[in-house]
Length: 156
Image 1 (cartoon, one colour):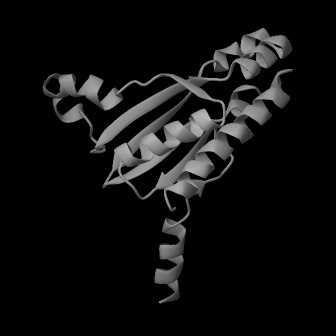
Image 2 (cartoon, one colour):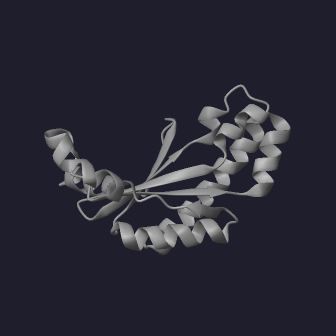
Image 3 (cartoon, rainbow, N blue to C red):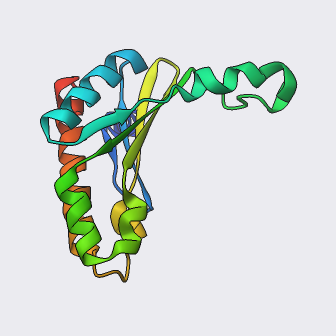
């Protein structure tokens, strides 16, 4: 009984917050619902979406060609948001122009079994040892704040 309760509580955690280079949020809603709320939250936090690739739509044309190698994880959707904040781009370029590799930022949303995961490459993982580390830390915290707000709005 206790094991079942612990397993259920673990499944309710909205964020996988280890020290890996990718931060993951779990949302118990479909991709379309999650996508719209995350998009608005990023924009409300001054991260402006400039490109929205439908990755699943783009690669689905290769299903026949790739055969058994196509979508082995049975993902139901893959979409991304490419976004930027001009002030942060300037701050990064002032601290370490090579860290402009972070600009623009992006997140990827994937759906499996009707639930969505939001994936974000941590800027601090990229900026280790750089003079732009403090800016990367602030960017990471503020993007996480925006996604946390979206997850909360979605009732997770």
